[in-house]
Length: 260
Image (cartoon, rainbow, N blue to C red):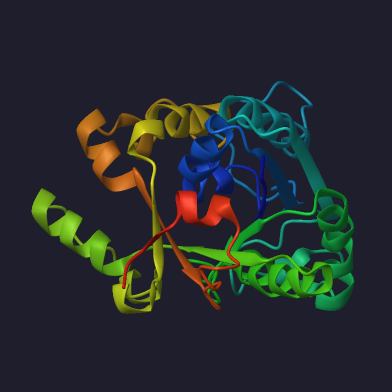
């Protein structure tokens, strides 16, 4: 049995970014651990979803455990930072937000968990955090440093395959988003994919677990099954450096398929 620790910025990020990978790993008998930098305090709740006086951070924390149960994750941890909000917002300057965290200090917090778990793989995000969110960028920085401190064999940077997305949107006749140039990475820079088509039901159920953020009418939850499987059933990663096949963890060889 191997161990994968998946590090994310906010509750629900795991559902979108890596749920298929994690569900596939758990189904194969591997240990999956979720770590969140924040509790997503600045998310926009679905109207009417919170009870009177209910704090969004508490609801989103509980949703992480519900998502973990769906995916087969065995442990959920929070590093204790607050949500920084979108780039350029005044909340980026809050003293306890993740964006303002000292990278070395935050990495040591994460490294405590990594030392306990001794993972074969740590998942983070690419250097632009997928789409430029400050907390996602910080996940990249903190995760990479924590992996160095704990000597994690493989760091897999979850990303959006920009070329894959463009092809899919054009085929469906949908408009290309305005922020396309800032989303993900070109296919030439992506090293690996994980085939998670057989686990898209768990991926969608993981999204539904985050009901404060994704209502029944959310576009990802209303996609036809075939479209959801096509668009969300493959997850892409940048692995740098790529481990030597002779010494790579077996779980890496089992799950990750080279693109080049």
